[in-house]
Image 1 (cartoon, rainbow, N blue to C red):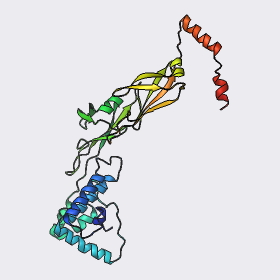
Image 2 (tube, rainbow, N blue to C red; image 1 turned 45 degrees about the vertical axis):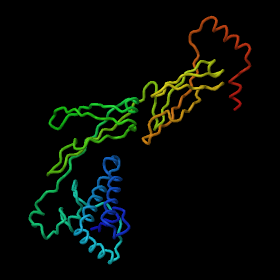
Image 3 (tube, helix red, strand yellow; image 1 turned 180 degrees about the vertical axis):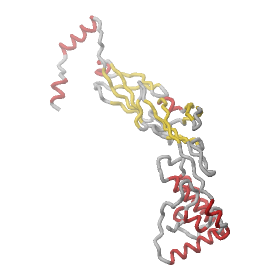
Image 4 (cartoon, rainbow, N blue to C red; image 1 turned 135 degrees about the vertical axis):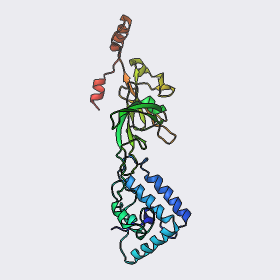
Length: 306
């Protein structure tokens, strides 16, 4: 059986650390590996259990003294100490190492009746349930409240209210604790995980924290340059379009995109689309004909040389 280095699990280098230092180390590691934060890390839950197990032992004077005696004995034998995931029964809170030396309630195994240890079934956490929900870019940007209905194990429909936080990322998961399948032998129920799918719309497309939109210009606006009013996701922007801009070029507007989760925003990237009128008046046709006759500009000749 692998000897568990509880000090290393809590990332404590000083084995004479004070109770306050142990508590602080526990808080940092628990926050770092909490399953609610590490929804995509399959090992986070087991690591989180090891962190709680280590703190349970090292925060109690008697259990820490007992552990330290075993620890020094282990080091004295010059065995290699490293972090490994604890071996534990499926859904069990404590590892085999913990139960062997401390029991479920930090008692010596001699204090527990043998027949109870052999007959008691380990609690098993219920399975998580995963589903998806589609929301618009506007709903994701401002935050919203959505309802989702799922069929329970008994065949009935149950409706859940989901609060979408402003600035949620595409494919991020929202966890509803205890709304999954029931546990066994007193184990807590699983969780409901809702994967958020942010849908692009006709006006905006989302890529990371950048928003993409099209800016449609007339040929004369593109040729002469102009100033236009562009509607971003939350405000109107006065935008200067430089003379001679081409279709397919982009204008980047910093801090006008999607929320980055740190108080800032990405870019709003405008794609230039130069549009030619399909229906023209006789006067417009005459002006284009005049331009054709006086202009020496030949894009085919210009760009074929590049």
